[in-house]
Image (cartoon, rainbow, N blue to C red; front, side, top):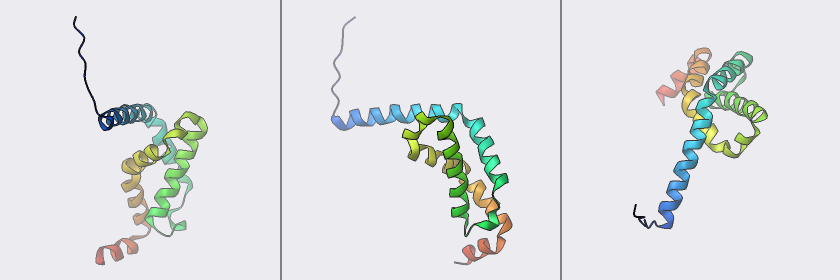
Length: 114
C-alpha cells in the first residue's frame, strides 16, 4: 500500500483540531444528558421565577447551578465551561424563558409591544 502525503494549512489543522474537540465535548455531554435533565428539573423545582428580574436572570441562574453541580461531580468538564453553557442555553433556554413568562405574563406582553 502506497503512502500519500496530504498538505494542510495551519488554519485547516486548527479547524480539524477544533472539530475533534467539539465532537468529544458533545459526546461527553450526550452521555450525561439524562443526568443534566434531572439537574435542570431539580433547580426548576427549587427556584421561584418570581424571585428574578427577567427571564435571562432566571435561566442563567438555573443553568449555572446545573453547570456547578456537573463540575462538582465531573471536574474534568470544567475545561469546557463555555461549550457546556452554550449547550445548556441552546437546549433548555427557551423552556426556562417560558416558565418565567408563565408567572410573569405582563412582562412578555410588554416585550411584544416594543
